[in-house]
Image 1 (cartoon, one colour):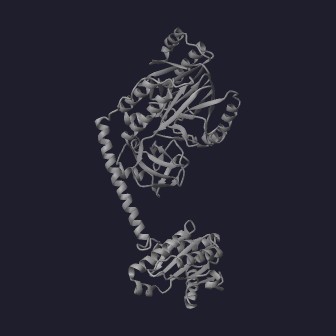
Image 2 (cartoon, one colour):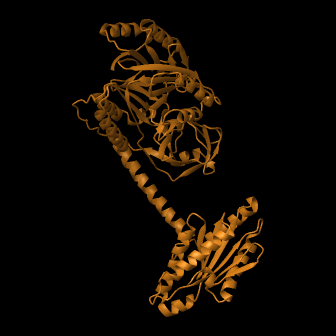
Image 3 (cartoon, rainbow, N blue to C red):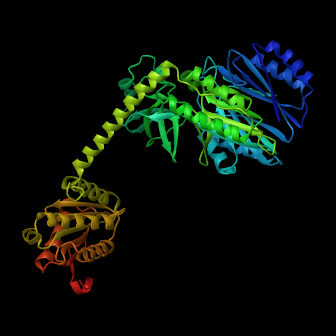
Length: 595
């Protein structure tokens, strides 16, 4: 394949482009004409498409609007880029659909019907989408259909149209289609290799914030039960919310991948408007752009581009990255173009694969490289280092300082939280935390009837152990029992030190038989732990019970405590089990093993 590009300032100049390309005599099996344009008048766009269609009736023609376009690795403002890509072994199929809120999944299935009609092997799909007038569509249902139906290894990428007057006058279009709320899919088929990658370059800054209320899929109403804009007002203090929140998007971690959500505005009641979907329960963090990380990631992509040896590249990058990196981004694109001729746009949202799932997000740079040749067409070029402007360097220093301070505060908070809820000697939950869990799960048991068992443990002869061997050995005995409790309750429930030599285990969802089995294992393991210097065994007494549906916390606790008391009064070193009605069953040494 071979790309040819032309830059014009207005649609009336399209005739010169047509004559110039015709004079080259370029030929192949198919021709894709892309129009990347800062010009946004519908009539003018249609005239360009009509002129190209008349001159090249066999060509596939499509494009989108953008505030800034990319031609041969150079950012072009207020220009129209006409890109001709001549293919030798590849065919393009164009699919167009309108989308409307609430109908995105239906559009997804309609698109799949069209894709399934294509007989040639699928090589990749490029999605051009438009949104306007704040009637943002939730693309997630549409992308979910494609995720489910398309092979997970198929390259799929895309972008949402932008314009200088966004969200107005953003268009996607093809030969017979133009829309401010539409989808144009370019399906690449035949024999072509496609290298797809994307970069982000933003780091978390704040503590985790949970989305606690939404107003539809696009407006985050509350974060941690506060108006969503509270945290921007607190940390940024800006009257120009949309402009100055640009370097500080919300980051979301989902399925092991980080996605950025860029605020599009604020509502009167303190919500934040996005043009990308979110949901209650999502964990977010305020973040900051790390220019050094961005440049490091783009260098890695350059290295991959160089090794791949492509023939043409499409860059679909977030418009916010252009505003943020500015001159530095121009240097990055120049490096890309030295390896592979690079063309594209700056978008108001990007589509890419996160693992197997297709997502729409912000602040991403999609880099797509095409190669029809079987072998890499590597060029003898080297990477020109990109040096941060002084402004970017100062921003990086301040952001690093704030990020480090926030990390230290978070670590301190975590340590204080752990100290407030855990016993320092055993590492188990302390009594206050266990009382909280006990109350919580007794209440749950009353509400939904979930089984709830409990085990109470008392170390036998613990005072004598301290008197005979010293308190350091007594501490070792406590830590040994605590480790056994953690081991046997991991993933099952909560283990805590109730006080002195008494311990409590709460087992939500576990039956009385399960609690009995755990008690036997813990008792046996403790007796064989060899903690004391003379290898004398250490024993413990156990009380086990299960809650009745609707039972009060005090009654449940009293029964497990009575079960433990029965074990101690019956000679220690044994397990007593009370069923929900208080009927006792004692396990002697012989019944639970040779101790």
